[in-house]
Length: 504
Image (cartoon, rainbow, N blue to C red; front, top):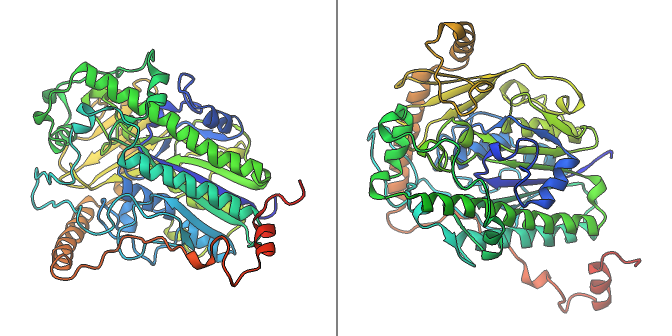
């Protein structure tokens, strides 16, 4: 495979602990399990930031939020920051996106030559948090626990409508790419919004989990007063006092979430079948990843916004000829995706590598190991100051200027119940990670940068909503005059070129 095609599946808010070595055995996900068998699987993969826009900008660029400036879900992703789509397109690839990427700002392409759908979330500055007002809840866009109390069955929803469209357009594009109208290699990113809350699913998927043994969290609600300071801020941001969360609510939410993994599996299966039926599968690298996780009621927490494993750990699998199928346990990050894709495609990132935090994972799929730490950052809603985290080996260190340090031994304590920061037996590991963090971050400067960004965006957003409003939302372009059959075309030529394969 000299110049491979690349197919990327990204999902939203998929808890990586459910992928210890591909999808957990009890999940009904035959297509993802088949992909896992042929893939290099990363058990300990982490998001760069446990929130959609910052996590995705980092995934595409190989840089942390403190470098991209995408601190939250309303921070602009600068057009000047190269993404894997830019690198591949520059090297001669056709690059295309079907689905969500939560780009904020007037640039809604970021290296993609074509987008097949609009986005599901707004691209302007309206969702900007404000560190000047700690504890403020902005009701019209903040998460609340209604996603839990409102869980259950529906045959259509806002999110289903979006993902049905994403899969349809992606499948259609796979067929179109097979027709040979464009001889360039291609990179197609198919990005779904499920299993992101609301926890609502179609009945046929709901029924798969009627007798599921995993409908309750392994660690129940610790109680608000027993939570760490940041977890309490998440509880407050989610308006927990306005809702009475019952065991039934928890079971229904988790059941719907698992069911939506099966829904995604079907959608991914449709795209994969199109790839196989058009005989492009052997020439295509496939990557599966999520932007961040979901706590799913563990410790009483839901959604994301924390560095706990359920929120920060994500599944990742790569099927590529140069990477051996098997399980990798070394910690890695989804910021490693950009340099990995370029490495697999034979595309140099030399010009920007000094400013790229991600590392190629190809060598891990060839039997080598990784010792460098994995970094995470968070500076969005439910935080009052930036938070940072390092995972290296068995340890994870969480830091925030407002809170006591947290150190967890994830091998001995996978549920992160025992903070070891003050434990003399772990002083060496704590000191080493603390020194690494001090070299990497100036938290005072980071805080000042976030505050400046927020203040600027509040001014711009309020100004642009006055008077005539020109939206930044991406409008997919369809040239109806060039579709199907028109009178400037030869019918015989149209029918022949649209058919694939032509020799069967």
